[in-house]
Image 1 (cartoon, rainbow, N blue to C red):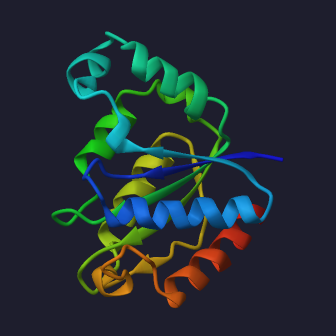
Image 2: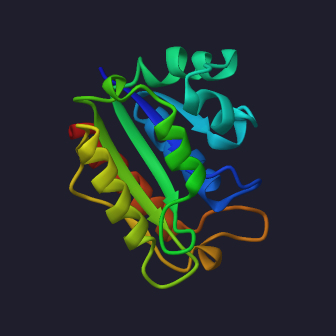
Length: 174
């Protein structure tokens, strides 16, 4: 069985990306999959100024050793920010040794407040992952108008949950 790592692709507190990531985690666990959730809120605050330039922090080394290296399939949940994917996600990838990502798999999930469901962010992320020699799953669910799909209490509606479950079943076969 492969190990899957769900990456909530923003460091924004109480983000919709995290809510969707948690639903993916729940879906995969219910299917008996070995998975883990990495919330980019938990990155060390100075990682861009240290880890990007070769001064590996203990916190980033732990993330790399315990989360990134053991995973062979990544599920990136990505909100569209300013017409692209969040800068913290790009900075995070830039801090990783590229070779630890080579020949792994990724699935992408997009979300946005607008009508395109993060399509531009997904396209950009696909290009970055291909450059890093990561195979990207063909199905990339896009959740448009994400704010209307999540209740005030933070609960996802039935439509988004069913699409998450459907996608999770498909990505297990990838």
